[in-house]
Image (cartoon, rainbow, N blue to C red; front, side, top):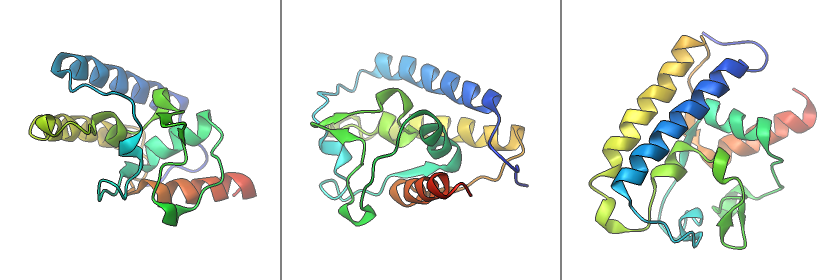
Length: 148
């Protein structure tokens, strides 16, 4: 079950709506983010950020992906300790907070919204892929640069 060509604009519109609903729920939880960029250094948190192909394609459609080295294990959109693509960031970025007080609350939110995004792949009849973000981003950048 794969979609040939670019994914539907309707899919991305629905993804944006999902992100908006998540942001409203996060506001209620108020996990507090001081926007220090520390969480974007995945090695510092012994963390691998995973993302769906839908989310990575959404990013690639909307922002220029800078050159980066996957082995650095740092988000290439981290600029001056700030997320330079805040409005387009992945689900994992949206629910990962440095504050350990929220480690019990946020996984349930993640699972809820992960399922909603996965449901988009079914609705739009596109293959679901869920891979390490940096690997998937590098692959998407390479495809965009070669036109494949």
